[in-house]
Length: 81
Ligand code: SF4
Image (tube, rainbow, N blue to C red; front, side):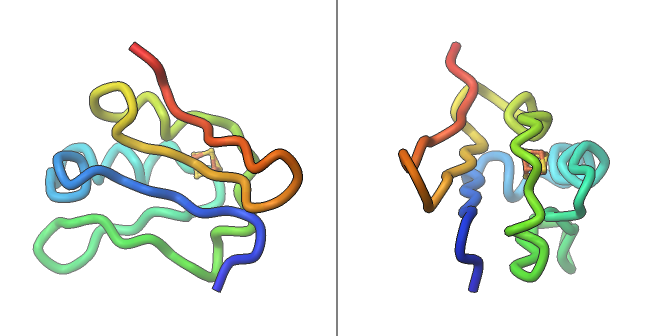
């Protein structure tokens, strides 16, 4: 269970094999993996390694990927339109 970071991926992205591939490619700390069937898997053990680089926020429609800080101001990072 991650202490510092939570990541949410909308079903539209989570179930799109091409977009999942992009998530896997952009994340520098391997928080995303492709599961069997092409859907996204969040790699829990890597979540707290998130660098808040925001590269994943550009995958899919605005707001499809959200990164939440679970500490401090608990900011939610997401791409807005
Ligand atoms: S913000 Fe960067 S490090 Fe964090 S999950 Fe997204 S791509 Fe990975």
